[in-house]
Length: 194
Length: 194
DNA sequence: CAAATATAATGAACATTGTTAATAAAAAGG
DNA sequence: CCTTTTTATTAACAATGTTCATTATATTTG
Image 1 (cartoon, each protein chain N blue to C red):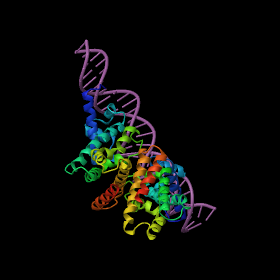
Image 2: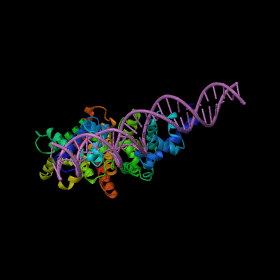
Image 3: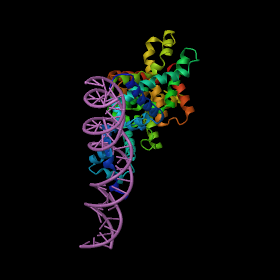
Image 4: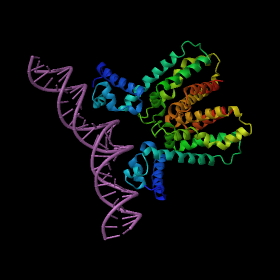
């Protein structure tokens, strides 16, 4: 297997197929045979380009993070910097996972170790929200809207609250209506941001 | 299959076996053949007593809730009622899931619909923390330590924060040390309780 | 107590899953 | 045009949940 442009192209075919399945049907529908069929190859061909299916999933995770950032950015780009924009960015972040529950599963429900327990994956996921809100976050700190010594704890609180809200809404259907979910989310996020 | 004491006993054999596996090795190690072997029967015998494996899992969930309540109670029984005891109860609740990560998986990571999407399960899980803290919660409200009109939102915040903390610690290894996890948890819970 | 019947326990079988090893096809090099 | 290397595929394995037909065991009846 030469490390050239052809190989890269082949890998992209499989990655694209896997991402489509994850976004549309979720990880439960993801199988080696499923991916390969969508990519137009036989199932074992995948093993000529990836060590195993987890290597493929890992690559999807990093791609999805970029997608998530752009999704949230698109929902906030007209709002002036400050706490309000930060709040909107977080809500945009949540909106991404509500729209693609399959990606939420992959990020927060899939067990550690299932995709090789790679430190890179854990870090990508653990920093996911902070990553999406980077610019807004730095603005709030540098302009004194959030005290520097409180910053890291507040971000952790936001991250935990966001994941908790999503877990119950996406995976436990609580609250039952989208309107209530948005309402709850707003109250809790703004409560952390004072 | 008569609905008598013998049938109940048989069901208990399978339920006990399933609970042992869930507590010890987690849901990934749970299989029909695995359960039946531990119960001392052949795998298809299970289907004479349960519609499918999800019915069995459902019964484990309700049993575990009772175990969790008693575990948390054991960690708090000497603390006088009030916010401090409520906080300790919540930490005890978290301790249960840290000790049995397999049960945490079952409660919060397992996908909706995987065990039949039964409303009873969703409710049991959604109210799990509130269930464990019932007495402490009611004391705080009736003694004016928590304003009645704020109560339901505060409980939701606690629940989301607790699950978020557990997700990252148990399933994403963040923070890396138990001491840091306890420290973070204390700060965030107490911050919500003022 | 023996025979007939009802109930409970089981083993074989099926369709899926991820992965490996051996084989067929295609591409590259001379 | 043949040889060699690279790439794609088919066959196979063990493990999964579940169903069906078949034994083994209990219970009831004569």
